[in-house]
Amino acid sequence: MENLTKIPQHISIIMDGNGRWARQRGKNRVEGHIEGVNSIRDVLRAASDIGVRYLSFYAFSEENWGRPEQEVSFLMELFAQSLLGEKDEMLAGGVRLRILGNRARLSAKLNAMIDQIESATAGGDRITMILFISYSGQWDILQASEKLAKRLAADPAFVPTAQDLSDGLVTAGIPDPDLLIRTSGEQRLSNYLLWQCAYTEFVFSPVLWPDFRREALLDAVREYARRDRRYGKIDGN
Image (tube, rainbow, N blue to C red; front, top):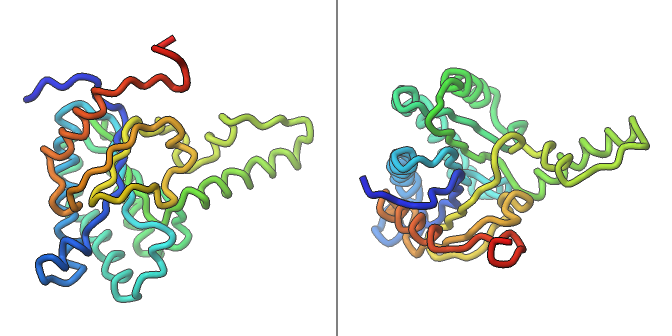
């Protein structure tokens, strides 16, 4: 195994390019999504091998609900099938699975399946994989702010801090991403982890997500290792 330095504790990935990958091959968009699942599997294995502790994926945004109903239905079914199909490998690989987002918009069937697999993998201690489904950064900050408002209403003397808001986000207890990768050449956050990415390093890869595999991940980690993260300070001081 390659001896990499400065391994990010948490890598997050905006998976982009499934549709373009399919169009380039004369395939239906859904085939791009299916191939994208193989990329998730390969990248998860690679991240676990090099010692990444948290690996998260922007799987389905709140805005994605506006896509054609047939595609949305297919994606929901793909999530369900993938959760079941990967369960044994996750258990064997010490993977803990978390599903975060506005789960009130998901079906009762999918929510029950999520609860089941999260419970089954809760003991995974090698790597935590997080799928953000029905998620948006603005929604996350809003729901966390509503929690602070309730605390203020109950205790007018309460003075909220940035940490208090962080504790109200769906990612509470999960370290902010050290490295965020977006595939397919796009260079924007698309309403993803807006609060959590305040000091995240970004790598924009031209590779379409269905083609993004182990070596592409390692390239991004190498780029991350070359950077000096100062968090607003000077030369590490």
